[in-house]
Length: 88
Image 1 (cartoon, one colour):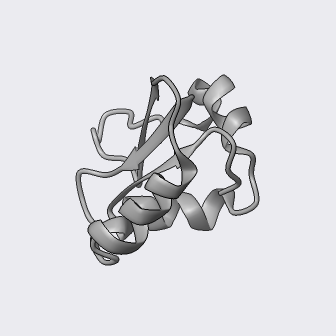
Image 2 (cartoon, one colour):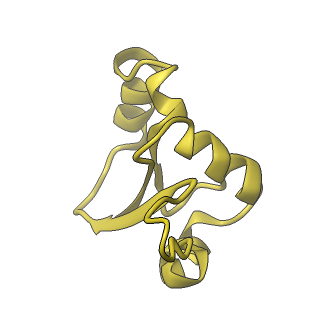
């Protein structure tokens, strides 16, 4: 299973990503990640950064547990992740 990590060097990177791509297929984003990455140019800053990882089987219940019970809601505004089967 592939996982998309969304984060930023500054504040609210994951929230910016969600606002821009709400309703988009995570699988499509991972398959075309360079099209979704932001060009930081000379400023070396982006609203958000993207990385993808390939893992073995991932239990969706465990992911739900992490997002709802372990990871702080405010932290998820800056860094979060999506499974390839999800929609932003």
